[in-house]
Image (tube, rainbow, N blue to C red; front, side, top):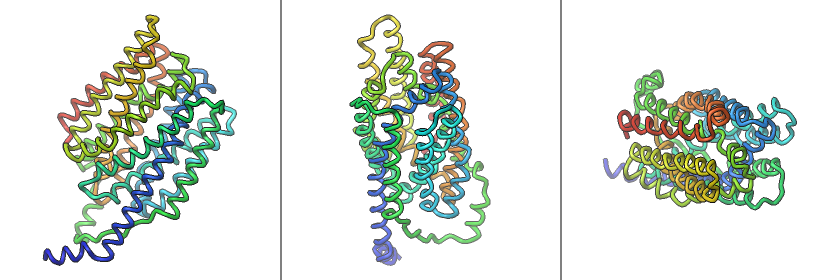
Length: 411
């Protein structure tokens, strides 16, 4: 029996499949490298760009909240399509929709068309991201998923450093120029997806048809793993979204920072991400998802605390600490993200073996609902209570996240 297994593992078909998987992963690493460059430059200027249309943190937050519709509404449908027709076939629609949304943002001259552009690019982003993450999981070995996600996101944040630095140079480009760069990068990604990435042949499992039929008829939310993951990741996106949905716009309004100055702070987030991403992936493989997620929340507490401290000192006329303090916060924010991402993706891509994409999409659906009100809440708190109010609320929220992880989350 063992000899038969060895022959099967070393068969030409298996070796060919492994080669395809390795090529896919390297292709995805390259894609994420250039995607990080385009996305980071775009992300730095997006909120100031919207703020220029609205003139208000509150209304900017509302538009960000509206964009959350595309983070939940189509996700189960996208997941079902991917499970039915294949991940790559549905993934192919992502970059074109993404790019079309950016084109709308470039040519818009009013807020309604701006909102349509935001919704369109978010839809493309969701189609791209869901299938990208599932494809990483499908091409990684079970024991190395953490490190593989670490490598993929290491490339993303490496590219992000370049994109953020490009904005930081302040070469006098208008906001729309950075959108155009991102469109060109999305076209390159789509070409890599079409001509380089291949779907590996699925390995055959010795399962009875009756068992498969029974699994397919099981309701997703009867799975306890999906219940816990849905509650935690929805709570997490709500807690973080309150502060982050208006973060860059807040830096513009409260501190009067330019896009170049915001980029000079944000670049430390990307450096921190790149440096700690691979170690975080190894840690996730070694200590498990639960402990890694708890670590992430503690690092997040430092980020929110530093933003509160800087704001208090700024209001007292102590401005010299603003840049160093915000940079320290960004460094810890980066570590929080890197200790979160591998565990997040390892969890979400393995919730239901028979319906990976659909289960991922269903959690993303509920998670997106949690994201919906955060921009409006963050904008309202910043304008009507105090600038630090969203950070204080998010800081308290992290305490509840840790308590939930300790009590309910299992590796």
